[in-house]
Image (tube, rainbow, N blue to C red; front, side, top):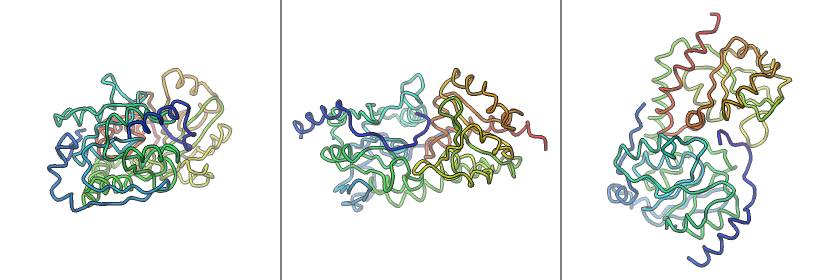
Length: 352
């Protein structure tokens, strides 16, 4: 899915059935920071053993990790990428068919792991219907889900399999740098969090430095959920943060919209689209080409000034939409080289 808004609903009958199994079983150029497998990374961790045991609190409960994890499973988004950047390729990851390419994987994950000569993680169903049996078969030492929508019931079940690291506050609300800090701590490399965060920021800042024409260009990042709908992402939402880090400025009007609690966005309705009249650029995305055509055919939508003049940065390419929605050590370099030409084209249409 290209974006997240609310907490996941409770377990379905599929997961409830899988519980029976548990009770019977009793686990640009992205540069991975180390070995390609968790087991190899453990051997090369250089003193990581001194970081254990470690206990990580979350909104759903505590996770106590007693020794260096060798078999890592990730849920939600971003955790797999950060683990890989730390030199720990997970043995299993939640699948995202919507954002994957022809390899069946998110392309930046596939590229990073194969470039390092590693073994690609096994993929399994996540979300509301987590494939518990698949996770059990992976025999994880730790389950990382700090940016996810796992429920309290799911957390309880997963914690019976292995220490499970959930989100510190609300589902799908963990900041990107906070996620890196949590994953680094869980993997015994807390001191590397600052380095990874600095590298991500530098990548974005270096890109911004090549585009002085972006200075003072304002934008709004919008979304629709059907005919007549319109929402705006708030400044701290990850996809907005990525764009502003490239040197553009969030239209001040965005701060006047009331946030829908826990979503980092505000629903304003298509009838209020003209409130975005001073946004030089509009950023958005579409689930597919058909949806894009339907949305753009709406008169109120088409009359928003930036859209009318073509100062729009939009895509229906699923891997790109996914990568540009999440900030982590692998997505940022992958996205930047694809993002800048699209932004350049939109800025060129401004009358300045």
